[in-house]
Length: 360
Image: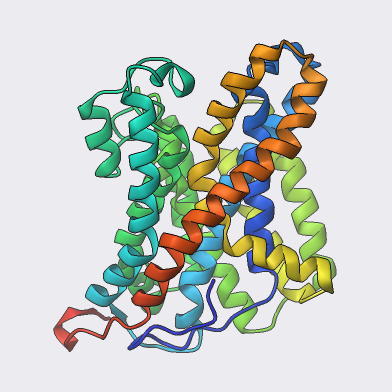
């Protein structure tokens, strides 16, 4: 979440802690990927491996945070969404670093001498085209180029429906949106649809985005307690782990959405907490670029490192230190050269005429 306000958009408040939460979510996903990408997950004790797998739910937190940040400008304003400029700003923020990361991953996944470093089978032009159109999860080929990019495709679909969500909010309520999207999520998994990527697409994940929007409204009303938020976050994480273990995907998405929402409320009520917190905030600003690049960096790193034949404990230690540092440096490079300049340009997109607005 940036401090600046886009031209023509409602004022966007900035809350300390949100970037720290982003950093934690990105780190959780990275940690989750270290054992499988390092090819030593099966050598680890099952309980430890399951603990690492839980880090995948950092993506759930990202989705909640996205809904939280996008809804904030509308909690203090009844303005409708300027659809055209909203989409343009989102495109500037998301697309340039995404396409650079996709180009790097595609070069590795399609190259005759490199594809076996990063993918199980050599990618083709169709795989890359689907990823370029943000359709990889819908086509069930999210792992053919860079498996981590599916969540960006999901974010894009959420951006597309966001004006409609705000319209519902202004006509009815956010609480009703959370309830309806929650029922939809559970029904989506109960439907007789045979698809390998059902949990990666919009109907299943809409509830988490809606929870983020609802939390933004709670924060704006200052009806939040630090103790209640911390207790809710703890209970939701326990519920999420339990439901995920039982393979109850629909209910588990609700639980992890509640965990992400509670964590948003918690970090905002805590505010800034000294030097370490500020460093985490800065790291969180790079979290998107870090996330985009961490998978190819990890896979290439471990392809060569595993030739040393070291134990899984040494591989884990190296992954959590050297590979983490390498991923952050590459992500920082993408952030400085592509993401940050593009984000700055997005702030100067002017509003479109009133007919471009979606209003009640």
